[in-house]
Image (cartoon, rainbow, N blue to C red; front, side, top):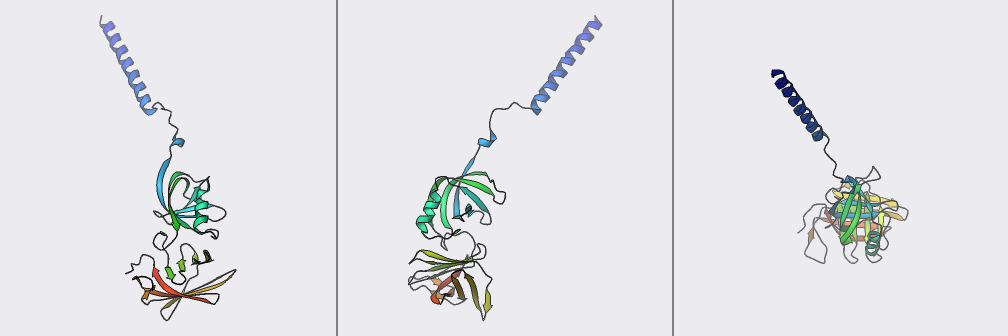
Length: 236
């Protein structure tokens, strides 16, 4: 009788042990529920600068202006918008856009992500109020209402003439400081530019805004005078 009880007890313990081991195995390898992770995409709102350099369509987000993203826009609406704002844009000239885009892995490791545009919002010419990439100076004039951006981070000295809707593009060059005046000089295939920035109060003559600096620009012997502001500087 005792032998039968002992045998039954051992058999019971063996069954429990097997069940516990089986349960542990199920916890280590849970059942798959059939979700394909590659189908999960994140759609986010973006604000920043769009450009087409002739090779890639690129975007700089205001959240991280130090990073460039690749853009996919199969309808080419982004380029249509760019063309309508800047009819004579040079390769790589940027406009400001707001959009919704799907975030995908970049096929090119030199770029952070591939952003697939899903919906467009605002789009306008880049100016000192909407650009999110820090610049050195933004200059403006009246009669004509030209504007000039100087930016080491974007590697440009860009003079925009609204009368012909054309931007004269020069690569950035380090300035000289002579007698308190900051002087930028550059040249391209069509000519030269010289920009003098003086720390003197300036009015654009069309508003009550007071700028901290005066600007004098010479492009191929054509002279322009106006005002200038540094990035992040408040104006009255």
